[in-house]
Length: 363
Image 1 (cartoon, helix red, strand yellow):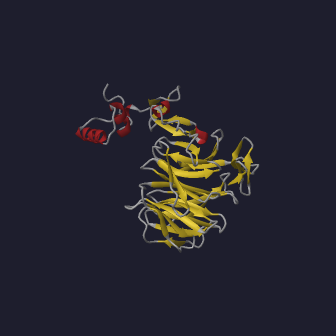
Image 2 (cartoon, helix red, strand yellow):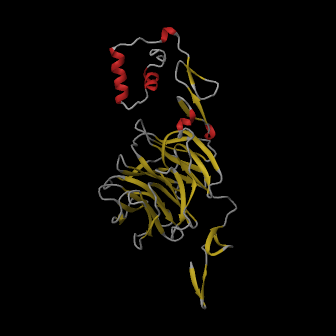
Image 3 (cartoon, one colour):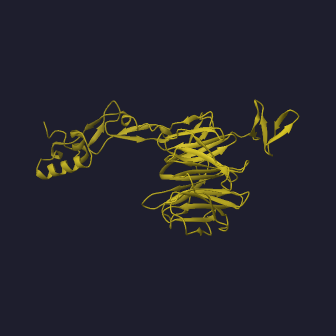
């Protein structure tokens, strides 16, 4: 907050914050702990320091992690794993232990998730079922909070200080909605100049709501009732999720596959914290066939059946016997044409993909 003094002004901080020694206009949290971000990249959960210098694997082997939230008091991570075979809502300790499935039935596309760390409840929105639901943090007492008027609910955030829940909707008429955490007092706070509202977060100290539009490529904020809108065009190709800490807004980008930050009100000091490159992304990791991700971010090359890895650790060599080499007929030609129609290119690759033991049929 800012107060007037004789011929000048002075900045003050709310409880739990102090002025930064090098910037008397900015506040920082009073804590001895190093703040960090937790993010998902479909197949794993990782922890990242705010300056991008420390990067830690928390959990891997996931199917399609989409939404996540963190209960600081209990040190528990909650996330949704969204698949066509069956979506789940899960949780675990931040050290990777005690993994639990909270919900595995009655889910379609739970794309938004929010922890009520005061009431001990878990909220989520499902764009497949067009619902907002709630349960205890351990999964008990599940119930539907909103089951009408939703089209494509995407992101979710809770304001435990005032007892409200906010969500974004990608439907034909995109909007940001507000409802009591008990399901009462529903309203729309933003429904103009908004197309694909993806990320959503709150500035609890200043009473603001922030959202990101993945179609219009901007981050915008407003008062909690939707008034006093202010936007920032930050050249963001496809923003997905948002969070906020002290003076900075942090976001993930689907197109650049990066984590970024900028000043929360001015958009200044924009920077990339990390681009978590997959080691198999460039040139298949140098592997002739399979490039497999290993724990900790490394990789190894592997081969299909009847091939073995050469001395270089990257090239696959045929181990087929003479009896395994197939003969050629019109049926094989038909299968080969189907392979090309499916988009497989490169003659040798087609042979290996359809019939592993066909290296010598042209010799």
